[in-house]
Image 1 (spheres, helix red, strand yellow):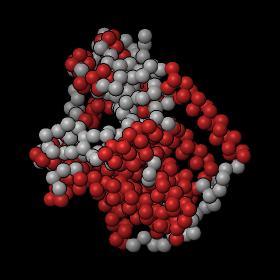
Image 2: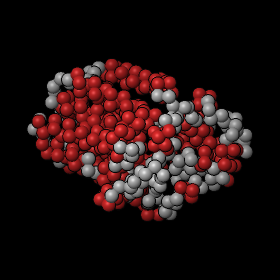
Image 3: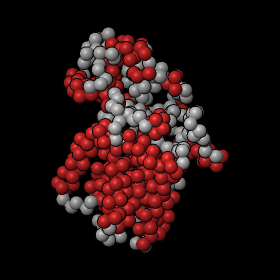
Image 4: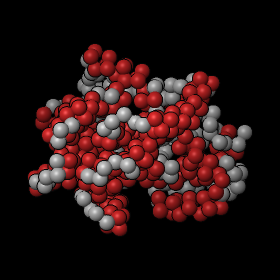
Length: 444
């Protein structure tokens, strides 16, 4: 809704991706609502899946091709892909770009110039539409480039990451005309507050009493950073940290993480557990795709009954391992281990690129993440599912089944116990601002 307000007013800021606002404005002649952008989003999603499926069918793997299309019907994925937001835009653009290149890589044919240019444009959009997309897409792009030497692959990945981080700000602010906000300072403020709440010592420019203040007002929660910005007492406690200058804040965070390593690791571990949705309560908010549009005065309507029914089905599926990011992370690691024995070739290379994409994005959440919404994991879930279809050609061996059962028990049993024993969290946003989850690793 905030982005649509920017679309209508023409006044942009960088809290939401300016490139998405520009695309939405360009599509307004086709309809003064969300329908054109939603159509583009879904078209990229199914177009990418269809290209990969077609390539598999042409190489004699028609069943795998149908499985690729079936992957697109997974309720958590298709449920969120029907919601207009930057995470779904990332999935649609990235999948379309991947399909354009993978279709030729899987068939071992040269990539036409037009397909390569279109893929580059789509990847460029995806890299700008989410600030952390570069951690997911850099290894995938390198895999699709067919660089042979590991040193060249690593160098290319670092160039992509460094280049995107260097140019995204100037593109957003100078080229696209977005006003800068304090969005880039949310990560260091979140972690500095987490350290302060766990140490009762001076942290950065915050006095020693800050920790007690933050705990008393429930300012620090592994679920999200929002209390620090939306609760007056919490914002006042961090007033000494200038939110407009992210550079010094990140330097202060690095220093305090060295001085208080246990507090920093507790802060990040508690949040990683929350965003991976491992030892958490059942019905943790931020997972179910909405069944209706937010109330608004712009005439943006809610979807029809069929779409709402599908979203309700997706909400049920998300309560199962299909909606548990830690389960998909474990699956990606298992597939990575299985890929060692796979026959070298284009299929294995594309699959490894997808797995690397999923794993590097998930790994980035260990240090760079301030909220636990399921939508942040849509791309890793999709990439892992696609890699599984590409790699698995026959039933797993008995040894592999035993290993998978052991892994499922090791991770799944504690997750099920936690969901059974932990109290249901608040479902209301205002109540969430004052909620401390069971596994918060905060002093009592």
